[in-house]
Image 1: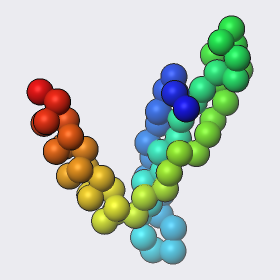
Image 2 (image 1 turned 45 degrees about the vertical axis):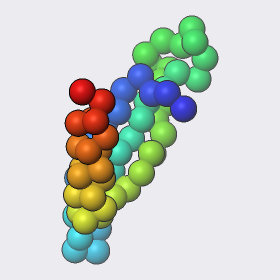
Image 3 (image 1 turned 45 degrees about the horizontal axis):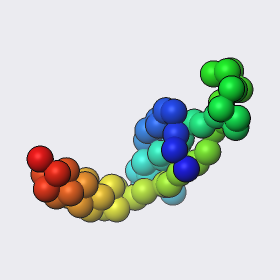
Image 4 (image 1 turned 180 degrees about the vertical axis):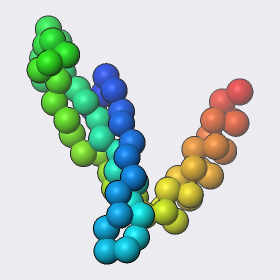
Length: 64
């Protein structure tokens, strides 16, 4: 699924920081921004987010 916007927020759950990544998409191509829908993409622990950061950095460096 392709998203028009992606938001990131940090929440604390059970004493651990969690990164929540949400995407907003149009249900129909002609949908207005007020009709965009939120879809939770992933919740990451701090260690998962750090690993993803490393992995993404490697892929992006290879694309240059």
